[in-house]
Length: 200
Image (cartoon, rainbow, N blue to C red; front, top):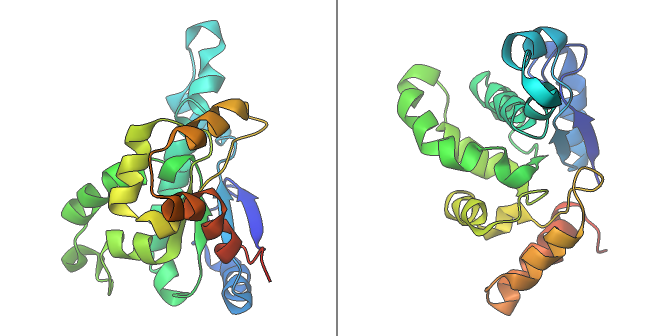
């Protein structure tokens, strides 16, 4: 199966050394860690998401954008700190069609090349090696096309986003996909069965 973490833990990301035992244990067990967004720290909310009308502060800070940016930063910190290189068999799962990372991978490689990072892999290669995406809450074709083009079908798991979004749009999205049956089976459940070891 695996474990799910929501946002930072006491204001810290998983690249902090105190989380090394958790990462080592997940790697040794061969189970993924699902990095779900969390409520941004108060200082972040104040600086980035405050003083908006109609209660939009919270929506922008969370599902409107902030959640996705925070999780992308979390994953990139794990890459750039060398944490994922220290645990090369560790697998992460992130939601929302990759939390903006599919459209930013080439940019990350461009502005943070290996000459700068001093890491054995490019940012994009590390992401493709150690990160899975779910579709949760993102049910339109362009984000899926970007995810397929950057991470590949074997790294994408179908998911709804309950209780944050209704289930019906997810089912309609899956039902409307024009994919070969074998590919659709992988996306719908085959990849999840494999990654989460749901089928013995």
